Figure 1 (tube, rainbow, N blue to C red):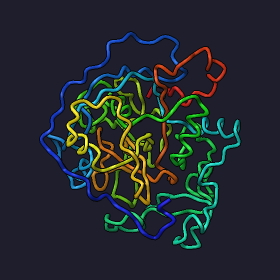
Figure 2: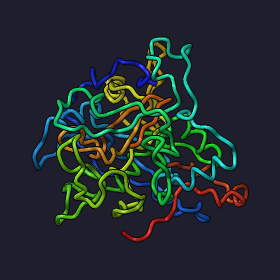
Figure 3: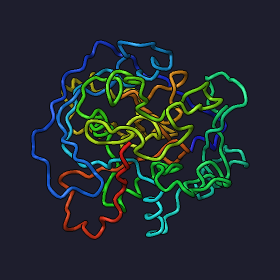
Length: 371
């Protein structure tokens, strides 16, 4: 829970290795399984090129260049087929989980001095991290300027105690940390995707495209994801139709029928994060990584982090362009904020309709109305 400490960490040490190229995606040819889980889509799996390179067209900002550093080199990966939620888990669905189990999220529990001996006393209260727009332009080299630890912020009160979920049942649940997401997934008979599964699914069958939908940010002038417009971090002008968080499924799905695989909220993956993980695969001579589950956690890492994917409504070419497909994010496993959510998957070998038939009402994704 790094936000309990005055120290703020930043991206550093990620290798920049060029020369890799994208090769075609080779999906598995197995027939579509029967008895699909509610509100999930089949992802066939197969072999693909994983990672990100600088766009070959358009204006490349410093934010874009920084975003690809830990997403290189491009490398070949194989994943088995699996089911994936059509959308991020919503407030409505997370509430079913909490009501059924009595689960209390990490943000609803006050941390202790024993856990965080160097934390300032004012931060030893139940709460979470909230994006707070600034009143005037600020340098973009210190994100503590626009993030605040807010007492009483949690999934029920995403931006603080004065906020609630009224009318936001179909919004993605936020203020859930990795631990909370895993608990939900286990209850629903699912799990979080690996980073490789997430990227295979996010690409929607395309290979090497800058975005989940192709190489143009706004094809024919149409916004394809909920991102940040306006001067960051002063005001999101909402040119894409939403100033801030949006309900799930408001933009066209990708080639596999998945919504919001770019923008709106970051999505937790099961892998531990290492900036040099892709480089290590290359140096180890791995030609095709089969069903990779990420690196082992570094026991010397004082702030272990898990991978996040997809970017959020705060992504902008002024600061963070990680709505680009293949780029990587990360977060402390015990810390949520108001632009991070998740979706779940089920391995093909784990899906047993007869056993889970009584649990169909707890599907973790709502089918959105047509955009």
